[in-house]
Image (cartoon, rainbow, N blue to C red):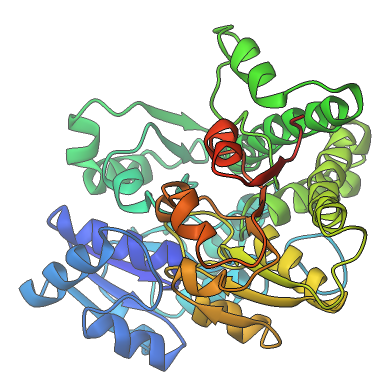
Length: 435
């Protein structure tokens, strides 16, 4: 099939490359000329494991092209809309500027019988509005809402081998379902569950999933707050309750909390939309989920000050991690970068190491110093903070690191190091939620 992908940021670039690898002819369209040029050369403008190979293969085979001209998408049977929905600058709601612009532009090239597929995360009710506008502009065209469930660092696998696919359709569009079945034929043939539902449910699936995961993370971080007060060990606590199959151990990693371009803004937009619908009480707990998450950053700063004798002013601090999570160069709402900047604002000399995210971090926080080398970041440091759990940071040797620091003080913001090993090497070891 000929497919178009409108918006070639993180979601769109991965989706376009993955669809080309499934055998489709794909054209990606984006308004950013530099991004298009990079993708057309087979070079993703962000870090995502497995994507460079997939992208180059599609481009070299001629199955994947990119353009700034939407007319290049004309003739595609299916158009995927993958543009961003950031948080509004004037409030917590989702900014639909890019979604509305993309759909309005598509009205000029979509033909009757074509299928437009929304993949962007939008407030519930958006799809119904866009479907009505599409039906008026192009009678006979169809809309499906097909939410994405990508994890940064695993996005290629999540696209090619998803744990489920969801179609939000209106009752009068069986042709739209058939078209999407054809797009995902090999994925469905592999046994991936397919859930067909209404627009509203499909829109809610993504934000509900993100809200649940955020709640689970903030729950264990709330337990970490209690453990710090009562003298408990939150890691042992998580291990114990995680054996209950109703709970499970995943996403019970206490520490600095979540960040990135999805969970924080999605739960805030979810609450904002519920308020608009008069259902604010139903998701009021998500405000506390957000608050707990932000408190972890403040607590990390407090612990660092405690380790430094009450103040970080004039201290040299080595920070391991800038990205919001490992296997990503994304620094949007990054807890690690937030903590590093706060410490610098309080008078510390901060050097940040990250294997992939230094360029993006420097664009956001130019006042900090950066390197890709952990030992270099920690040279002469009075205290070391592990804030993003990259494998190379988890596997650091305490003696090797101890040879370059000024003081052997480690604050483990992700609870991924072995306290006994580090203390045995002469380090003062602190972690959130542990004795």
